[in-house]
Image 1 (cartoon, chains in turn yellow, purple, red):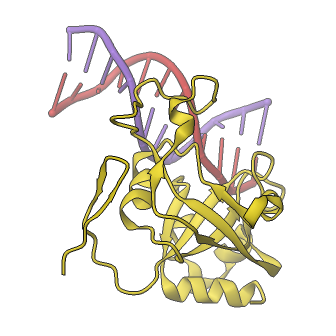
Image 2 (spheres, chains in turn cyan, red, blue):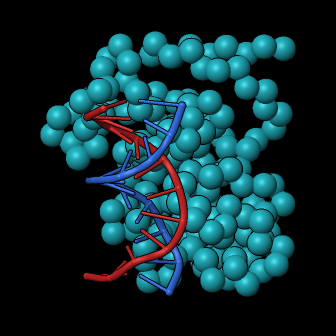
Length: 173
DNA sequence: GCCAACGTTGGC
DNA sequence: GCCAACGTTGGC
């Protein structure tokens, strides 16, 4: 079975995915926090400003509505996963790339070639207690998670199901 | 705020 | 296509 999804001039690459996937998405809470997401209309936010090709490609080629997202706060007092969100749209162009007043403006982005793509992210649930980076590092079963690998800066990372489930358990869900 | 570890850019 | 210079990320 081959899948082709067309949207806004892109041809979504055919990716064979069986069942939902799991992700970790980083954000600096002083820029956009989990609380900010909860207070948005429909508790949904376009995940704009991603200017890394690997991260973009995950959104463009692999994310599906309904995929689960671990919401991660970086550069905060206690870095870690604070709750659960979900992918809430198919990918579409990041409008901030073509907005010359935006700090995410990219002069190379055009209507014909938007260059940067995003998905919407929707709030799903609070963790009863956050799962800190420190705690992830201290948990041997989570030692393979990308977020604790040395030098791993990618702001969107795939997460293995077993890791996702354990993190949720540690978070009290 | 420091700075190591990355990623991107652009001259050649 | 190499790689130096520059910009960014993110733990600490």
